[in-house]
Image (cartoon, rainbow, N blue to C red; front, side, top):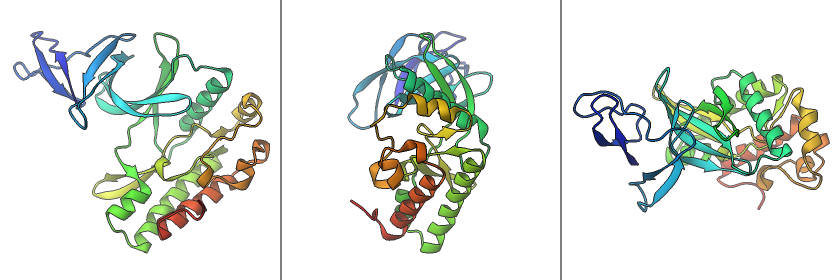
Length: 271
């Protein structure tokens, strides 16, 4: 993926990749963000079908590079933090026009849940704020990895190696439970495996459906009756039964069991 940027020193335009550090080929100075907050730029995607896609130019000190994913309440961007330090981050912001009371409460719960935890197998939160339009966002660790099932199959991991990775995931979930946080959406796409110092490291992400501490009552009060939150294939019976008031840490343990089954057998136990 590439875009046209301008050097902050000589003002020369050049094509830059989606790296954290973009430097002018002539004077080696940094590139300025392609647009200011509240504006939209078109970034040319050189991978895949080569289509052009419009993104926010920047949000605060974060230069948006591409869309990592979208969900029911928000969009997650890959972004480059340009000050005070340079690094890639994942930036999650509420979708414009979708900031209902329920969505805002869930978004706040996820942000608070991540801020409460500190574990090597849980994606960290770095920053939070609001956009120029007043939409809340938060910035978290960018996990450049693949879902745990894909990693295990691609690398042909043995049963023992799969169990070792899974044990780290269990440690992360236990840490969340000790903080009073229930994930409620554990599944392969929310457990990504990256590589650190040549070793695979699983990271639990996406606490968008979490119940956390004192925010639990608020979240439950704004969740409409009759709406099932979660992924049916990995959901505990009590969660699937729309009785969210009865959902506790055991619902995550059930989901972990489904994930373990898929890791060892190659498919979920239920259609």
